[in-house]
Amino acid sequence: MTASTSTPPLALEKRVIVTGATVQARYTLRAVEGRTLTGRWAGQWDLALTAGNAPDRYLTLPGRPSLGSSGRTREGSSVALVDEWVGIEASLSWDPEAELAWGPVETISVSESGYERIYQGTALLFTWPLDGRGVDAELTVGLTVSRR
Image (cartoon, rainbow, N blue to C red; front, side, top):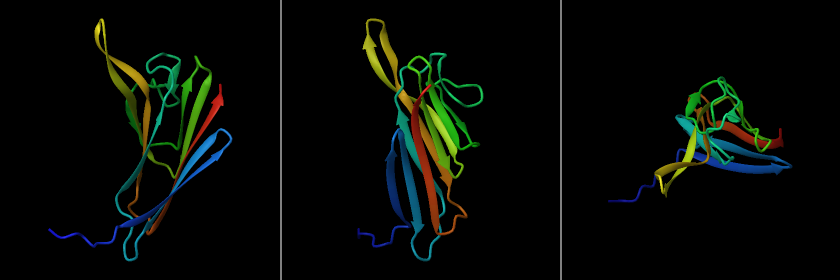
């Protein structure tokens, strides 16, 4: 078996910028010479709030899905995770528009009543198609936390 000497298909630069209550991740993808960006690029953010299935903890999407739900949307460029009990809102925005998938982060605990799922947070997966983007792609996700 021989080691591969092929060139990677892209170069990646990630910048994290913190300003006040906002954290922004900027991804710059560059295809190597002679190639184009083809495929999909995804980034995942996991946010921990206080409860997954309480009626006052939800995503600001149609139907107000709970933080402990799973789902996917291909439309939009922003969402907020709301926790009315604590009185906070975690607002996320991304550019360009991307597919958003979300689901609970859970652990399993053993108690007197048996095995239980314990909500730890919500995972948000942003996915961008790269087909047709030429040789460069600039992708951004930002998070701002505020009182509600």
